Image (cartoon, rainbow, N blue to C red; front, side):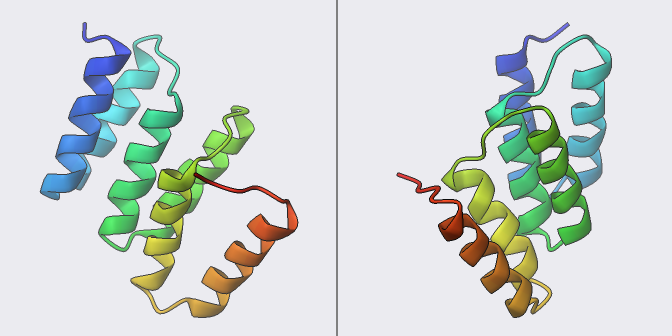
Length: 108
């Protein structure tokens, strides 16, 4: 069974290659094998979905990350914004960006 580090590398690689279904299956496998996704896991999936314009899926992972108590970083945030841009959802993008500013959450 792969460790979390290996899962994260595979998730990122599959996402970049456009193997969305395989990445999603691996992400589900990660969770069913007793691993808890970490910031890298969540970010990899948000970016995978964002890169390919699947904003609903990206939002679901974003919500899952927040429920798990994981604080998003710039990578996760940009992945979510990217998913909105693929669908021309500029008002949602702006609202999301402004909500981050109001929460005084800055990214490096």
